[in-house]
Structures are given as structure tokens and as C-alpha cells.
Image 1 (cartoon, rainbow, N blue to C red):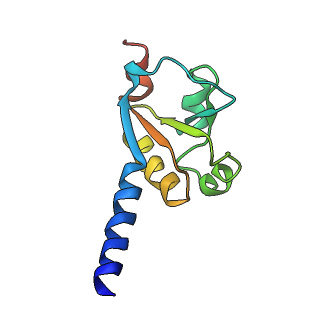
Image 2: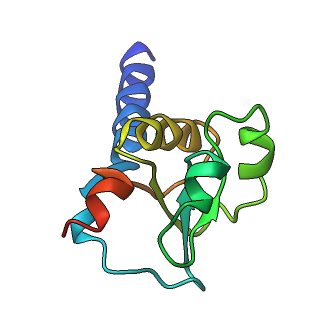
Length: 116
């Protein structure tokens, strides 16, 4: 019985780790809005100064982050980005905790997007 529990724990840990994926934002070429969501987790002021076309702004620093993210379809592939990559990594971890299955952190963030 203990071996079975250990095996199940290890399997679930591997599954959770497999859900977290990152790629550099310079590799991001766009997304299919019917199957994917692009989330900009910067502040509204940062978002309003410029964003990637089609992005939805859900501020990581907002107290309503969890409430707003609950309206996103968890079956879709989710791309997250911020200014440089720190907030998007934290939001990616939160999304996985909340049950989102396919969340990709776009490393380098908005600052690196236009340098490609």
C-alpha cells in the first residue's frame, strides 16, 4: 500500500511539473484566439502604454487576480507575459495551482518582444 501511495505521489508530481513550460518571447509568433489566450499580467498603466495585439490584461499585482483569472477558459492554452518575466512566472505558477493545464510563460517579457 505504501509503495502504491509513493508511486501515485511521484506520478502526480511529474504531471504537475509537466504543466509548466516556458519559452522566450522572441519565439512567440502569435496565437489562435479560438484555442489560446494571451494574458498580459502587467499593471493597467503598463498595458495601456503598449501591449501585444490580442492580449487580455489581468494585473498580477491586483487583489482581484484570482477572480479575474477564473473567467478564463481553463481548457485553452494560456500564454502569460509581463515586462521582463518575473510576474509572468509567478502568475504561471498560480494558474497551474488553480487548475489550468497548459500555461506557457513567455520569458523576457514585453521589453524583449520588440527587440526580436
